[in-house]
Image 1: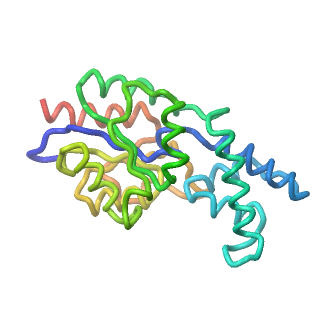
Image 2 (image 1 turned 180 degrees about the horizontal axis):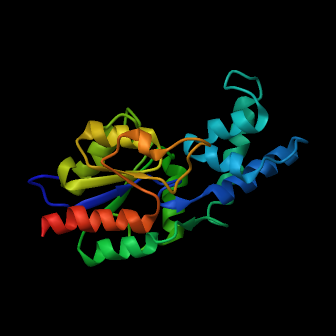
Length: 228
């Protein structure tokens, strides 16, 4: 962030800001039960959450999008999830402290996610994180989703800052690629929903953090301090 002052921190949603995997595991296994199938281990569901509802259906039922039952099963999964948005979902440890610290420094924060707005917006509202998010960008708002940089560039436009004045934190390689293509410093969230054997170190982010507290130290040690 040479020559630029930090003005905002942007987060991916599932697996970065909020730990939504417990609710996804509940509804995925409820759907499996409805279909007379055995439940999936939590770790299997957790690893798939960042890939979205399509991946959850594919892994749960061993089918792809061309299967005759795929659309029906995915619609039912989303229906169940919408009714269970914030049952066991919580911010990752240290996240409320990070957001409070951003507020104390008058830094905006927001969410750039591939989760559709009809699920992301009520989830954030019910989570009641403080201070409130300043921007929410979903696939509904852009033509191209991550790893395309368009969602991050839109978030910066809405915040009135340059990409170089924001940091993006995400738990998937597409988050880091989107940030890099947007010209934005990136932090790979190693605490998120990584596949077995996958390492956030492989994504070529500017920084990698294994915990939210480590990400906080990076933000305030490398970017806020440099802006002072």
